[in-house]
View 1 (cartoon, rainbow, N blue to C red):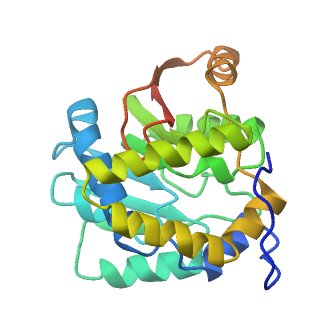
View 2: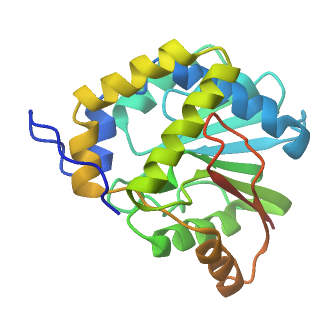
Amino acid sequence: MSDLPATPGAPPPPTWIDWFDVESVFEDPISDKHIEVFFRSTTPLLKYNSADTVLDIGCGRGGLAAALHPRVAAVHCADTSPRYLDLCRRRFERTPNVFTHSLDPADYTNLSSLPAAHFSIIICLSVIQYYRDVTEVECLIESTRRLAKPGARLLIADIPASPGPLGQLADIAALLRSATREHCLLPMLQRLLKMKRSTYSQTRFTQGLLTLPPATLTAMTNRLNLNAQLLTSPLTLQPNRRHLLIHF
């Protein structure tokens, strides 16, 4: 999965989980724009409403919860990072319908600590590229089955589909075009430069990113006997990414 050359500098954290708990590269205006685009794009698809209880897996700083909580009954934020969960708790300390949950970094697809049959919408946004293999994605889906109310939907969004350096270059080109349309090209260029200068590129070189082409996703949904749709319409700032919508 590794396709970026290492950049000289400080040693990278040993895993992506460690990296996210110490780095702040993604704490910038682009993250807010990413959430804005995702919320705008998924509102017609998921039809968020006051009856929904939403689970956000890999919540980060809670950007999605900030967009959702005025429209839904409750948002539950789950993450492996103590730093991000602390940011969420402080951000929503006066927001009674936002809750935080810690996931075990050693077993992050295990959601057994969360209430069963509780969620009508489950979202996993820009997360599974940091998983190790497709088996972990399958474990996550199986874990969410227990949490899902009848008729619930799971959206695994922003899945890299094209492996290797050519896929990476195509992703960057599409990302810059999208940033231009969304009037955030300068902040996007600043983020890309910051990523290059941080330990991100080193960590990506050592850990790689999980890429799941459409054929792999289709085979997975067939193995798990899922009622699923592979969405190709852009839902985020990364128009080359794919999205898996599962109906329980």
